[in-house]
Image (cartoon, rainbow, N blue to C red; front, side, top):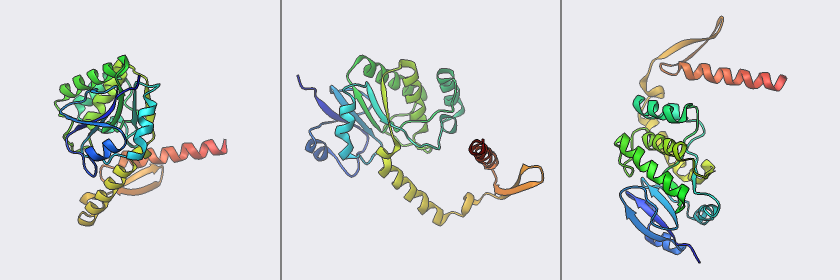
Length: 230
């Protein structure tokens, strides 16, 4: 018995659409919230640029997994996004917010016990945050990513975590947007330079608000060098 495969679009789908989905054998529906209308469903949101050449591989992963989703950004953790209240509720489930987030705008889900439990929990967590899934948010969807993280830890489905390269075009577009903004905004967003003491008698300058990041990067470099010499 062949399984039905399709795409559920939340919000606006840019650069592609129903025709592109049908060309690779996917049924196409629109919705207002995450759901699993097919045996294997690709849930797309926020006008994401779909990597059409990778979609068949994502569907294939659902032969053995309840869900498949790319990582979002290697340099951003759960502790870096969302409101204080969202972080507090996430920490109550995840315990440690030093974990990576997921690109929930490209989510493959199977109509299995684990997949259904994941999506049901995800919808519950989104409702708790009061953030409609199709709408972009100022922090790059941080609220939705925390909601998905809580849902995943609550239900513990079999999730195949894909590399960030699956969202490379989206990241490239974000980088282009950042470059455009930098042309009209001074370095550091207009923040003043401050002096940070990184070791006794050693100082560096950075933009106000970046002091902790500077010290953390220095600590990481020191640890890396120590490991190489050790």
